[in-house]
Amino acid sequence: MDGPAKIPTVSLVDSLIYNLVHVIPSYLRGIFTPNRFWFTFWTRVHPDPASVKFVTRLRKKYRSNYWYLHMLTTKSLVVLDPDGIRHVLDHSPDIYADAKLKRTGMSHFQPDSVTISRGDEWRERRRFNESVLETGHGLHQYAKTFLDVVHDETATLLGQAGNQLVWEDFAALFDRITMRVIFGSGVRDTSMTEALRKMMRESNRGFALSKSNYFDDFYAAMRRNRQEARDGSLAALCNSVPSTARTKVDNQITHWMFAMGDTLAINTVRALALLCAHPAAEEHVRNELGTADLSTAEGINQLRYLEGCIQEAMRLWPTTPMLVRETVKEDVLGGATIPPGTQVLIINSFTHRDRETLPFADAFSPDVWLRDSVDYRFNHLSNGPQGCAGKELALFIAKAVIATVLTGQRTSLERPPLDPSRPLPYLYNHFQVRLRRSVA
Image (cartoon, rainbow, N blue to C red; front, side, top):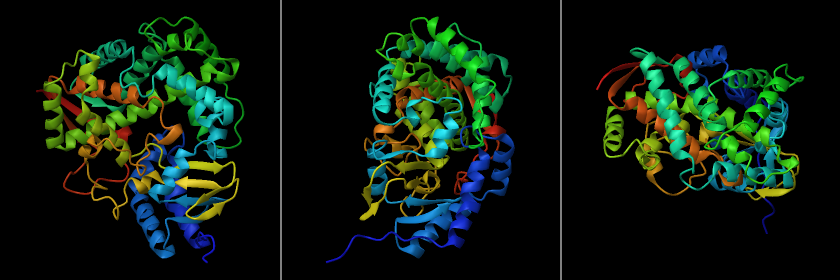
């Protein structure tokens, strides 16, 4: 009778190479918010193709979709098998909880957020997040109010921007949208988003973190804005949804600010760049816009092809290149026993671009997202119990922004260039995006 499976351990040389081509560049680009200097540097050096090819080579060399390597000094289990990935994510956080590096970094600016919580605290905070964000409802009860905010802010941007749009325009736009969606349509001060971004930059270091100079003032402003929140905002819902002292409401709001004001802005800009570089897809989107009532939340919600374009931007360039978990109890993966305290890696930057299993790996393929099935190879919004609670709301806001930008005008991509006839790059520098506007 065969014994339990044995997971191979890669050589120290292979571990070293992987750290050089993937771990160190990802760390320097920014774990919690992108570092402009290092993002630009690594986009030019572009080690990611080597990283993806190297993981492919390791899979062949060790003849397994599971292997141990050392990520820096920590022995870690790499999981490439889609069924294994599903198992890990479907059992998070009860068996596979967020690892120490993420907990340490996020604790610097949101110490009690749901994403780094465990056990009963996680369950209570997750329930609260799902209640306020209305996870799985398709359309939030305040969707029309949020749409009015997007229309107002995007129209203001387009009226002031001239014939060019650059990253800084979109960053400021999403900061304003974030504040108004979360705290109410009358809240336009973005000093909180600026303070949060400063704390996130500090967190990028990941170690030797002392209390931020911005922390107390940030949470004092948070409490004021939440207490004064008007109907039609997420913060107002926070005040009406049941919670306890253990919920740590303000920390949950911080995570929404983090996701909406930073990550969503990046993904929206990249989706626009992809559309500008792919005329057939852009025309498909324009036809879809032409048949929808864009003044209604229902009209925005039905833009499925545009939503697929946004999801494709996330698949091609995941803002979280790697998910890191830690076993809190013994489990079995790949037929082998995995002891407690094992660090587990899901490499999004590889599984999203695996040429051996994905015929569209390096192409812009929005049609993939018109299917109803869930594919655990793609985890830019994660999957399982810890999947993004605000997924529907985030996609709604991104669709509303892009629909407003494209309506009544033509938009072309000036930089960085994208060639649809060639495999798309593994990195795309949103900091350098410049779009040119003209009358449609």
